[in-house]
Image 1 (cartoon, rainbow, N blue to C red):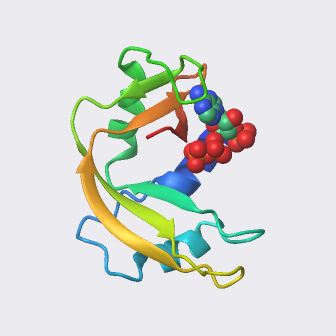
Image 2: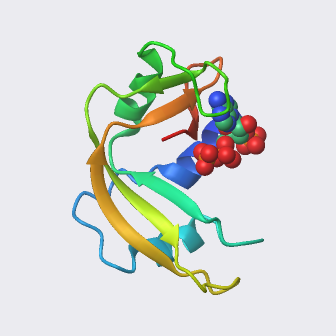
Image 3: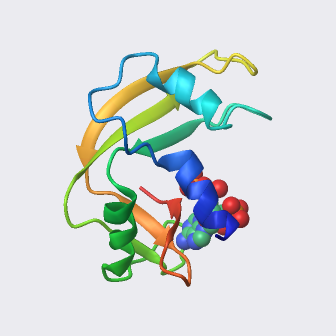
Length: 121
Ligand code: PAP
């Protein structure tokens, strides 16, 4: 497995969390998934759908990504996600996050093997 796909799963996939997250969800998950090691990653989203369903987004038509590349794809259906946003005044290594559950279509960038490597929106 290429590193981009592995990193995507580590940073963005949490399939087996099928109920609403509690307010501590992001504090725990951002640490557990190694996004608070060197610095507090400011914003990150976890997707609570199966890896199969998220990989299938790569089969949707190509659209432009925020960085101008054209390897992005938008999910047909809305997906259960949790947004984690660093709180004001939070200082490394005490990274504190606001946990916001949502349901929306997501946009992923896929590599040449048609697997997600980046969450664009
Ligand atoms: P993210 O999913 O939180 O955005 P990020 O580390 O920014 O994570 O991006 C993951 C990888 O997707 C990056 O590669 P790297 O891990 O080797 O640094 C990034 O280069 C890659 N990538 C591929 N396509 C795109 C794209 N269209 N836009 C942004 N990143 C992309």
